[in-house]
Image 1 (cartoon, rainbow, N blue to C red):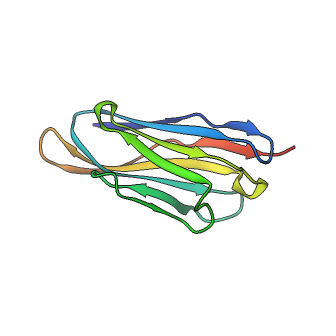
Image 2 (tube, rainbow, N blue to C red):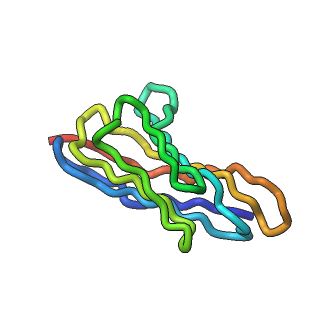
Length: 120
């Protein structure tokens, strides 16, 4: 079993910053790629950012230059540093990861989400 837990969401004013965390736990041999998605009210879930096991990163155009994804392999944790936040960044942010378990299986897991609200 593998679990992903996100934290760090909250209410922030436009122009502010937040840092989200996503920690994987359980029967983990290796955490492979990690990803952030978000879903705004009434909209489909959209991809935000990816970081590979070798720290190669990718970003959606809508957040490029404002958000930074990073990871701490020792703690099976990914981060999303969000700067210059805009009201349109308001959404539930979800983490997912491809995890190789200790019995050799490849799992694809989602976290429960963390709410980010950007409002004055």
